[in-house]
Length: 516
Image (tube, rainbow, N blue to C red; front, side, top):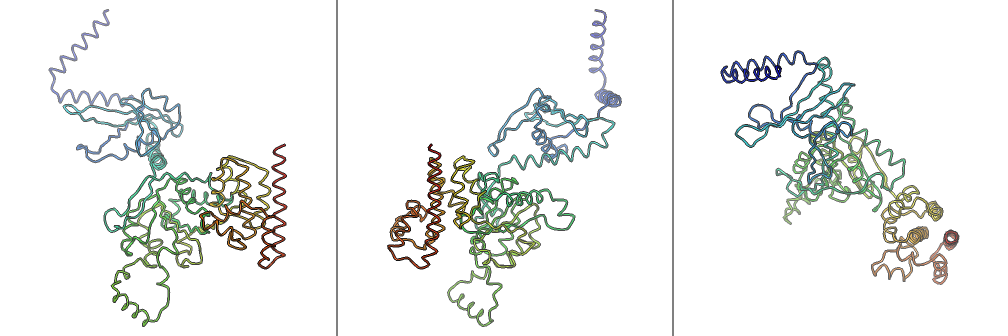
């Protein structure tokens, strides 16, 4: 009781002194007490306010990065050290994020040292506003060797988390590139990934390794004096998966996609303005580069009289705007000129169905660094499609498909995917139809060679050649061929048909074994 009485007396004395002593003296005593406490404390404390300065206008970016960093720490034990967390989810992201509740602490470790973050939220007197800050506590003895590397670690982890968790956007130019915003965007939610992409494993590995090396090559590009960008040329027949590969690249790197429509760009100045408005960590795509606009006229050597006569004809027809179009020189500067260095971590992708139609200056090294040739499905790509559409890892018909591929019956991923999608309820029927389409490809029926009148009528009615050829059989094609007298090369035709008859019998025997 005597001790409690002395404590109450001491508290009463402090209350009297607080009311009697001047405010300046009390502040000085408080500062002295904190200094004395810091002297004996084994920890150092660093405050990170939400705003810089006293006015509270300039946002402190480090505060935002600390908040993102604490979200990126997925260690359950780290999150468990905080008793209260505030959960939230924004419209622009499907990820649930947490914020440390007011006056709560989260512990962290770095270089075998224990650190902690405390979130302070204080209400401003006579105001509804709140003053927020984070306080970092670390060992005082090691603060000089811990502070700077740890803050660099926090910043890098926060930027990586922000890149991965934010919603990606798909941009397209709206025809007003010279204004403040020449792009409009929608959420980019394409489901294509390298796991679901129908590519050969070696090619897939090469692309992913190149993308990873590019994304992690900031110091390397700066050291060698090159702009941090990379060019990809995707060429192959329609339906070979060029657009799906671009979407998989964007999802793999978590980049935004800018789909540049050159026909909407009036001149080279607008093209440069659009480039300036793109953000870092983005993929700029120009599809069908060989047929979007005429980019070969600059390289064509024409007599001066021909050029003057053409200009006079343009003026007579009122086509002066042709002189303000996008030129090959402007596009070259866009991809590899001085203006292409106005941003970092960008990938430029050109697509074309025919690589030989693209001007050689556009596809040289330094502009298009990686050339990816996409074509028909190999066996690995075919199995990936079957796994995606039908959920099958193996099937007896795979042997027949492999024989058809070796005989020249390969189809594009789009063709195979359409057949599998149409018959996804019956895997056996879907694979038989794919085999029929491959057999038709071997005989040349899918390209108009030997197509009968019934097939042509069906195509005119709206069905594809593959859907028509699936109905028939190699025996019926042989019978029709004999009745029509053949179209030349009968021996080659008979060999192909006999080969397909053997494949068909093999397919029937496989299906018979499955039914037993």
